[in-house]
Image 1 (cartoon, helix red, strand yellow):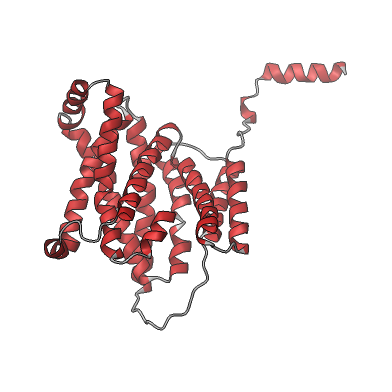
Image 2: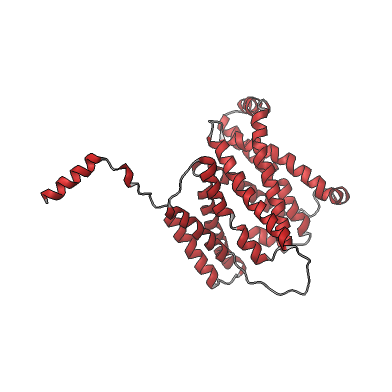
Length: 311
């Protein structure tokens, strides 16, 4: 987030930001291959495992192409929504992906959330909105916007975010296949999807100016950090779930904003303070152990009554 903000202030930032999305699957795939090689123990085992689990399993590869395609749709819909909605409206509505993810978790994974956990999910949503809230600023440039198109696009983006994350979690936890193998399968599909997207949206610019036009060391830094962040996100999903991923992402937003205060002199506002407080409280409430009184055995109840009578 911090490096991305700095990248926005650099010249040729348009192609620089697009390059981030182009190269995310490639860098992430390279890092995954290195990690998988270490896990396999040797290059020969790595090649054998890739043949068996990746190239020799087209059905599994096709299965992981679903979240790659859905994430691509999400990114495009988010861009359409941002182009047709005010920044504040976009900011508020896009955070609905948090409760949407919780709903997809309940429906697709057959899990249950307590009333307190649902309350903490919506509290987290409100906290993130306040943390990222920036008052609208008047501008002399009039941009033609279509609010209905924007709301439709943001709805699709929110649904795609929840579905893709929970779908990947379901595939990840439904078999004993290595986490790194699953990442390789998804990033291979992601490369195909991003190449098609580049050809359709920026093919003329790439042919005219070259694929690496606008690249700087800061662009590569953002690519690297975002790629590694995506990989560690999959680790979080593997060992926890997508809802916890949302809570950790919210905590990361708060911490990165605090870092922006130190690095860029960002002013702390009342809304940020209130939002950060809500995020912290929601994390605490969601982590509280669930109390299930229906599991109390009759013998335990009887012994409790006997001890009470003895007293």
